[in-house]
Amino acid sequence: MFLFPVQPCIMGCGRGTSQTFRRHEEDKRRMATILLVEDESDLAQIVLRELGGAGYSVLHASDGLTALEHHARTAVDLVILDWMLPRLNGLEVLRQLRQSSATPV
Image (cartoon, rainbow, N blue to C red; front, top):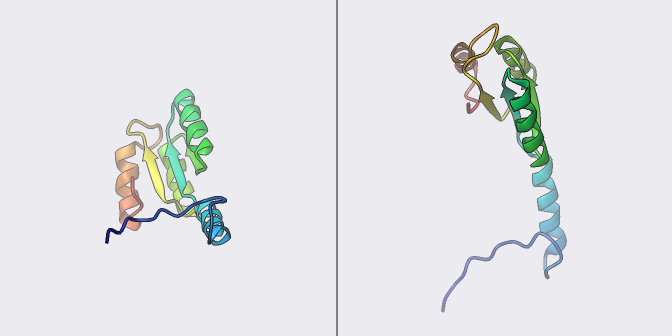
C-alpha cells in the first residue's frame, strides 16, 4: 500500500471544505507585520506596494531612530533594514534591536 501526502484544499473540493476554508481565513488574519527601514523613497514605495499586495502589514521608517520607535510600539515579525540611513545607521539600529529583541532582520 502506498500513502501519498494529502494537501488541504482551500476552496470547494469535497469533505471538510468549510473547516479548511476557516483555517485559511485564520492564516490570512495572522499575516506577518514587516518593518521596512529604507530612506530612498522610490525604492521604499516599490517594496511597500509589493509586500502590501502580497497581504503583509508593512510599516515604513525612513531613518534609524524612527525604525527603533516603530519597533518599540508595534509587534513586528520581520525587519527589512537598509545599512546607510540618516540619523542612525543600519548597523547601530541592528545593535540596539538585538539588545531587546530576537526579531529576524
